[in-house]
Length: 403
Image 1 (cartoon, rainbow, N blue to C red):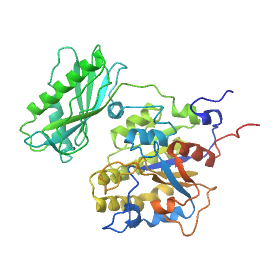
Image 2: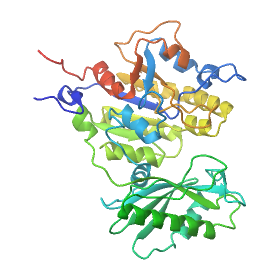
Image 3: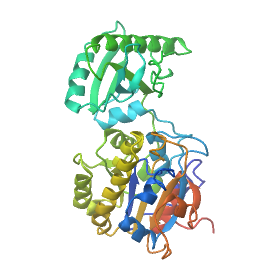
Image 4: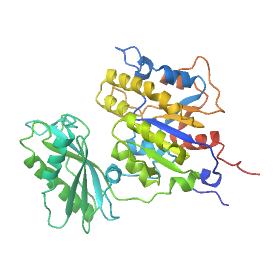
């Protein structure tokens, strides 16, 4: 069989009875904080993670490339073995799929945030104080009354301050810039497009943004909107075809469910808490041989710039880790899609701590799970796309290459 041009492991993967569990702590990586005396991982009391580290292989993963700050979509794609530079997916599509929107190939989806604007129209909070979902849902219903002559508009609430905008019509294009400058103190950006279709789409988006500000003017927090991740539905090779795995995803947040669905994973319905995710994982554990389990709280705290909250999120995860480990996966991966240091209050380009545990890993009695120790680990610093081949190898799921 000739080598697969993009996924070499597709020609080597084989099925067997072993189970792989990939636990993704969103925004896992941090930075040394001079006032705290360490990174979030170094300060957190994580005895269960540290105990697992002593029998595991450790390293660092590079989500995209050195110096590149990834979004959650590219970060997760890389963890699943897809080169995010080769397979670009817009955040809008992922959010839409995650809440069950049936996108047509010609639709354009954008991820939206309610935001707070000051009296001069400058952004003071990109997330509108993470307003309550019930309030945001009512505001989405209000914005859904915006009309355009040639383009149909649908606005779907996602969670908290997030929503999805869907544009449908002839002669539209996702090749426009976002309206979120991702910086405080600036007004929402104007959208632009180079082609006729893109230019028409950008004009529609700017009209929607202006109308939204007019309609939300009396809101104390959510008095503006920011749009990004304009995208149409892509076609990706299926995860199970590449890996010969039967995969399932357990995630509470829509975007991560959308990404898993796009590559062919079964989405297991679950609740809104990590405890409920673990219950779902346990209930279905005998039915699949690959699980993606998502933990969001680390990223939320990092984005808020709250060092202590991220420490607390890591400690909370650590307390629940034994319930995950008692399932007895043959290969357990503890990884992150990107770093979100509280010191930066956002995603960063820093490599992410990585831990892989199986019967074939050899750890150290001195090991702990931290950025510093992982930087000296036996895995080294690897592209995040190499994690799945390693996981398959440790599950004895790859044939030998060559005669």
